[in-house]
Length: 122
Picture 1 (cartoon, rainbow, N blue to C red):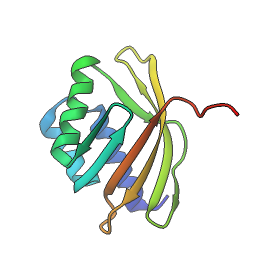
Picture 2 (picture 1 turned 60 degrees about the vertical axis):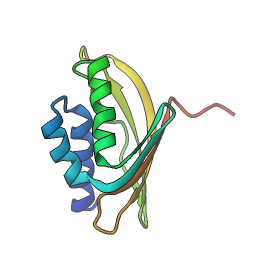
Picture 3 (picture 1 turned 90 degrees about the vertical axis):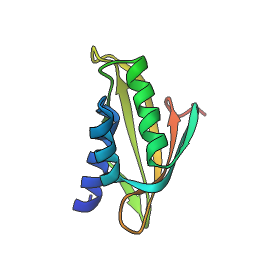
């Protein structure tokens, strides 16, 4: 993975692990385009502030939550995808998923579309 993409995704994952709004905002400024759009099965957030608020809600409901990669990152052109899991404060994995993303011209994330759970069987 290119160094810039690695930095962007590291800041993005760290933002999901950050309960403090100010630090989370700094991490999202490094990783998330100002007008970026986040979508998952539970909600849609337009803009950096809305995404930070959503992450804050996750931390309110699940103090100590952390997000981690469970795969490498696959990229072609300005599109990426990777798998992840969300762990509760005690380290127990409570959710797994896959994110598909689009990168902005400056290398930050412009869109993430997240799917929860394992892929369905045939």
